[in-house]
Amino acid sequence: MRDLMQLVQICKGRNIYIQTHNFPDPDAIASAFGLQRLLQKFDVDSTLCYAGRIDKLSAYKMLDVFGIKMYSYEELSTRMRQDDAIICVDSQKNGGNITDFIGDEIACIDHHPTFVEVKYEYSDIYITGACASIIADYYRELDIVPDKDVATALMYGLRMDTLQFSRGVTPLDIKMFGYLFPYSDPDVLAQLERNNLELKDLQAYGAAIDSITIFNKVGFVSIPFSCPDGLIGALSDFVLALEEVLVAIVLCKREDGIKFSVRSEIPGVHAGHLTRAALAGYGDGGGHQAMAGGLVRNEQLDSLGQFVDDFFRERFLEELDKLDK
Image (cartoon, rainbow, N blue to C red; front, side, top):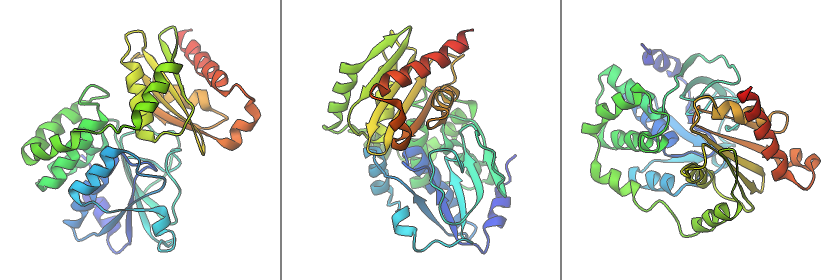
């Protein structure tokens, strides 16, 4: 059994920041918010923070509906000190999708696989469909009833990260759905789940349709303009929905480099391991069995020449070919 009281004791007397990955999605926001409210029950105050951007419409709606305040790195860079304590939530230090803030990462609560081992004072890394399920389980184990906002936020994060319980679901996710359901607000959930697609997103879907190529059940898409992380992930789900595709790989050219989103419906193809292997030596990548992401920064692209799309398509196909042997 997890011992959250150990984390509470570690936090006492410290200035606490709860940091998500750089582009917080509903699961990251819900998990950080739920943990913040839970720690308050033990007189531990904290600040929610992130680097990068909040670029999902669904994430903006969450912050507005629940009145959640998250601070960007720019807002905190002059405030944070070396002896501040950081809890990584829905992310891990050196995970490739989290900026190293000023301060000491004392704890980690995450549902992703570990690729770079880090020693924390408190660690709860448990592979499940949503990080929100881990936070919800803290409330259950401590017999603390979450308030309606927390329960609804956690339920929304759980539903979004598991794609409405169709992706990466574990017994804990199902159990926490049952636990949160009577405490959540169905009307607010319905409000959050409506109208999460913006008109400008249709251009990206059009580019995906125009560029898709399929090689032996592997669908590749290249988006030639910048898209937010959430939209890139939605595009990879869109491609994976095709009957002819069992592995979807989306490349998106952005100001900072090429962002990758990968999905897999093949049990023997771990999306996180595939992405990490294909980008090795050029960028960072990783994630779950069914979904993963990665980034190759501009400085690494200069040596690859003009046909970058072809280069990375071959890298992914080579790694997939190794799995077949």
